[in-house]
Length: 244
Image (cartoon, rainbow, N blue to C red):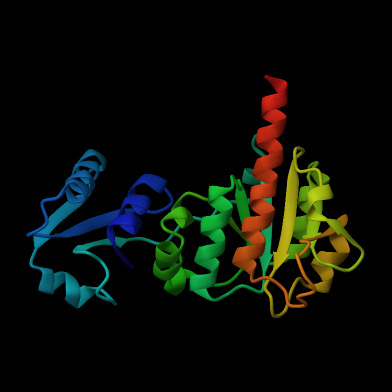
């Protein structure tokens, strides 16, 4: 696959989730960012090819690559037991398949300290370059697990001590009332289909995001992920401060 743009290429090299086979740099680029990429590639034994911009344009799907692309292998996915390190903050995401939106969700979750994302099993390979770019590289750093049965994944988390929350308004408490200082899994659905009945049946507590007015429509998944994720970060940061 072709990875485009300096941010995505650096993340692919530093994230350790895939094999980067070759990096192609515009031969006219001699800035600090290009120098870092070339230096990092040399450290990792990755081939670097300096070539005309036209050659890079011919391989890229767009024109926003900035003269940097990489040839790389598929992403390596993680397994459910990888979620259990430390104090997990895991998220199960359903109903978000647009790669741009998924990338935005991943960017928010990784920034808030999410330690693992569970997605439904499917072939994501064609979408990976877009996910990587729209996530600003976070896709390469966040552990991602593909599950054929999301409800079973929720059960796995419960069996290993994670409190399971579902972002669902029915029979819910405000998300400010949840306790995220403990190991947690939060299930978030897309704004169109929401969470599946099987996942909702497995989760222990529904939570909702209060609005400032009587607006009836759901936040998109990226907005919900940001609100929920940073509440987890706030609680954990506050708890850490109390322990000092």
